[in-house]
Amino acid sequence: MAVQGAQVQDVVVIGAGMAGLLAAAALARDGRTVTVLDRDDLPDRPAPRPGVPQGRQPHLLLRRGLTAIEELLPGFGDDLRAAGAVPVDTGELAWLGAAGWSPPSRQVEVLLAPRPLVELLLRQRVEASPGVRVLGGRRVAGLRRGGPGEPRWWVDAVPVGWSDAPDASPGDDPAPEPWPADLVVDASGRASRLPTWLEALDVAPAAVDALDARVGYSTVRLRLPTEKVGVAGVVLLPVRGLGGGLALPTGAGWWTVTGVGADEQRPPRDLPALRDYLAGLRDDSLARMVAAGHLDGDVATHRQTGNRRHRYDRVPGWPDGLVVVGDALCAFNPVYGQGITVAALDALALRRADARGGLAAPGGAARAVRECARLSDLPWLMATTADQVLAGLPTSRAPVSVISGRWIAELERMSAHGDDAAQGALSRIYQLVAPPTSLFHPRLVARWVRARARGYGPPVPRPAVLRDDAPDAVGGAR
Ligand SMILES: Cc1cc2nc3c(=O)[nH]c(=O)nc-3n(C[C@H](O)[C@H](O)[C@H](O)COP(=O)(O)OP(=O)(O)OC[C@H]3O[C@@H](n4cnc5c(N)ncnc54)[C@H](O)[C@@H]3O)c2cc1C
Image 1 (cartoon, rainbow, N blue to C red):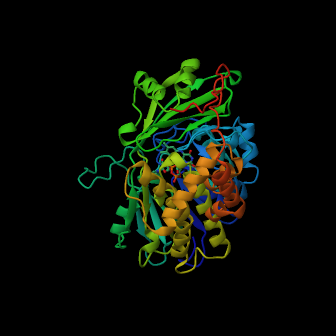
Image 2: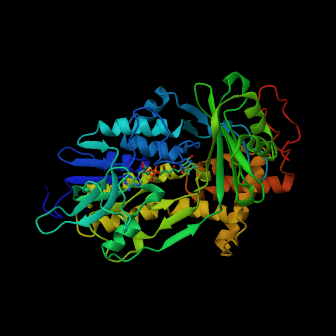
Image 3: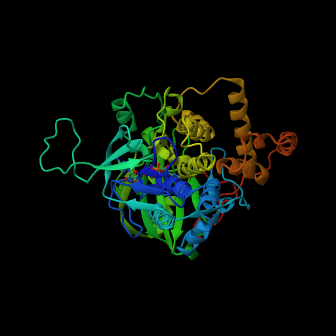
């Protein structure tokens, strides 16, 4: 066991979701033990589980997320492809934005697969890393500082069913199992109990930034032979006062079709009402896909989607040897598909800090937490700015925000009139592979000036989503 503070020998990661597994991959090295504890029994096949209630909802791994995961685990994209993930060029999705349909083009390749499959493959890769063990059936119930001559932390894990309510009778509950750690990584997602544990440790509370557009997801899984579908997938962006949805292939002829809407437009929980909901969207292609496919299982609903950011980066006297990553630090409205990518960027930040010896040094954990918080600044700005509009909340009146908002609306309009350079620029921002300044490239400005002078051109026609559809020459969306 390490002398307190000298080095990181024992790492305990709380949570074996995407962020916890990626953090374990980042911190694994010879001569070190990385123990990942999860409350769930972890299945050895790709199956949803209670600790990840969003597991039956579609998960799109942004391009930046895949490259970040590959930096940690080279060849992970090939693993995903070999397991059946579907490579899709985002320019081949039938994409209906606020201004209309985007033109078909070549943009950025992403991989589509069910979330439980991605997580299983990741767990198998991480378990093969030096010194890593991933243990299910252990819920972390508390965090204690070690005494003199002890490790820095004790992480108390309890079996499933154990009650930690203050008034619970001791009963037959076994004593918590204490795990020693020089470094603790909280990766327990939206359900993180870290605020409570910090309070018990007399650490000042962290402020919470929150914006909840009250977005809901309702998803059905269906089989739809590839030859029946004319596009790589469908995205109908939810806009203020109107619901939206998406249809994404998950491999071997399987699709998920999802209604996505905010507030009054949240999609319903039962199948007949969901069919009606999909039929009433700006475009009825999702309803027709459901009608054409063979459904498997019932409707999976999820409504815990608010943007929520714990400002641990601003807590004075942040404890050494404790870091927070993934949704436990910053969770986003999932409509923008950023969560796994930010978790992977957090893991890369931990790896960089570790390589510098920065995690064991006094103040090193606080610096790492600040770095992870900084990495979520841009995705947070993108998600919350769009959600203010979606939720009908007042938006920032700062000149830079007003000008950016108007310029993005112009690029969307150019895209909906066939400008694939405008579409590509927006797509690269969305995929987090280009900085926002790239939206102001002189070439785009020149194209806009030309469009203003000569007209934007005809709107992009509605794509033939099902092969039987005839493309609609006038744009199609209601
Ligand atoms: C509807 C929906 C759709 C989404 N779609 C996308 C998408 O398309 N693309 C994308 O990138 N992201 C998407 N996300 C976000 C993505 O799911 C999360 O950002 C990502 O899973 C974060 O990983 P995490 O490890 O922080 O949390 P999770 O993956 O939620 O994992 C947390 C883990 O901690 C465990 N745990 C919790 N408490 C304890 C405890 N006390 N002790 C031990 N273990 C514990 C849980 O069992 C779980 O395994 C979506 C989210 C939702 C809700």
